[in-house]
Image (cartoon, rainbow, N blue to C red; front, side, top):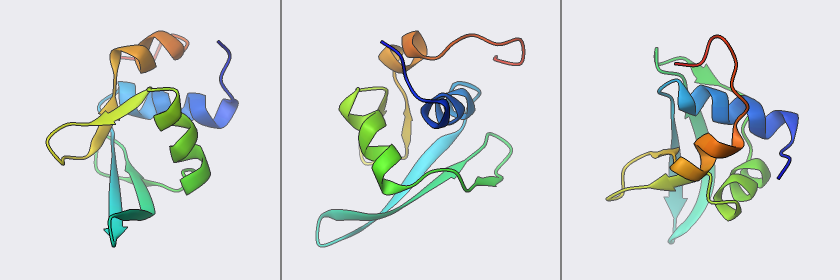
Amino acid sequence: MDISRDEQRILHLLAQGGRIEVIKQHKKITETTCFTREGWRYGGLNLELFGKLKRRRAIASHKSGPYRITRRGLELVRSQLDNR
């Protein structure tokens, strides 16, 4: 299954140790923020892109923690030399 370039970028960040933190209001996600493993904020993530990754089961949250890449997400992401 092909994924878009934007989804590919986010999955690469997550595969290298990044995370996605969400802000909820009234049990609904209102804001998402993507962080690299160094703690830098990545601005290329919006709610629509977050929804696509979640629907494809490429990301998941465990015990109300930040969203991280899943095994399915690792299968979807294309390998590159800088991936760890």
